[in-house]
Length: 195
Ligand code: GLN
Image (cartoon, rainbow, N blue to C red; front, side, top):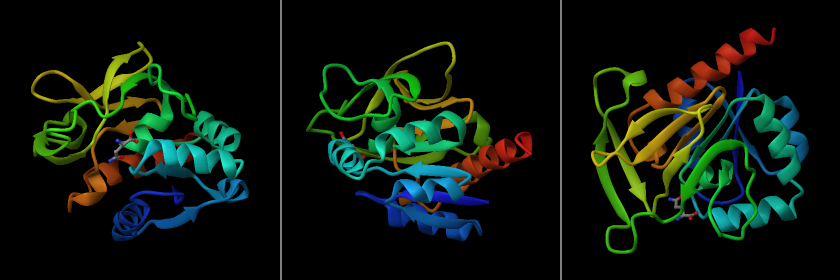
């Protein structure tokens, strides 16, 4: 199983380390042709406008769209924004792969970074310690999308749409490997189904 981490900007090194700890080969992706050999892809957090601009410059937008249409892809924070179909009136390149509406920088300036424990049923009873850094939230989902986690106030911060996963926080900045393990499980199932 080979998983790529989009390495244009942002926290890609941290994702690589998490995958390595799970014994998974991680590839830093910067060129469209690298996608062909991958079974899954992580789009890291960082700055979605920069990731979008660089992806356009490197001719990656359409290849990434095609990849996400067929293969497991997980966006964290800026990666979630990049995967969304609707980001409001923002003008920036996005993939539009997931049926979600996302509000960028949803927590404003004052509390633009915080940490909290989330209940994520797919991961078991133990709460997941989530780090939010100038994070987005999901403000609307279509019926094709499953909600995996909400904040105490009900706002949606983790979603899955078949082989696509998106989280508003940064699981690569904690020691908890469970979400990376969960994504690897999606990759494994998809590989088996397509065999
Ligand atoms: N605020 C950033 C954006 O709009 C996302 C922040 C992050 O990825 N930690 O792209």
